[in-house]
Image 1 (tube, one colour):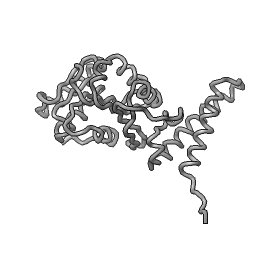
Image 2 (cartoon, rainbow, N blue to C red; image 1 turned 90 degrees about the vertical axis):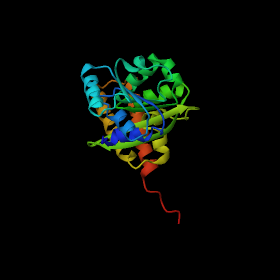
Image 3 (cartoon, rainbow, N blue to C red; image 1 turned 45 degrees about the horizontal axis):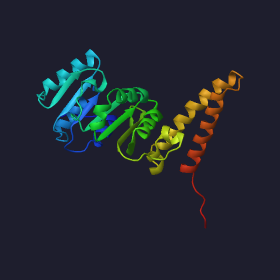
Image 4 (tube, rainbow, N blue to C red; image 1 turned 120 degrees about the vertical axis):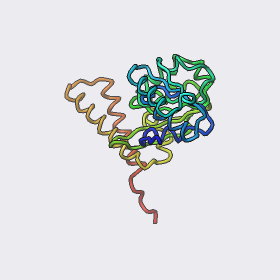
Length: 236
């Protein structure tokens, strides 16, 4: 039986039973194989743009005798997926800008999907902004830890977007709303990253708009950490 790491397991939890999935950047087709073997998806499309991962995925599917249920394809993004062929689009393990470019390149496929699940490695705000500007609402978000790294997983469906601040677009409006237990660690790591960038800018001794933007972001992160996770005084 296929065993998924925490990152892909979180993605799998957002796939509704009975839905067909297109997994873009499938690598070894672990997610499609898991979904089909567990009876969550009746069939899946596994896509990769590189020959090596495509060959590995094809071999994995053949070894498990699932070539009739998991269709492995070599191609760029959603270009090899037909409109209406997949209810759920999964784009995991790539940057937010790359995910956005893939979605923009195949609007007819995106239009027919009922859910998009993304796991951006970076540029999380970029994909949330794409959802907001294209009529997709974030319905759930998750933070998971794997190999000492934290990953965001985002599920979106057609609907009215959240009214979120720029910082929430980067951090995750639903993660903030729910006070996710891993969020303090995530915010602390983000704060450390921007403080380091700011230190480098300050050494240049130039008052740049970009520096002021980072200063504001650092201040907002500190405030968010304090507001969400500092002990509140007892009114009594």
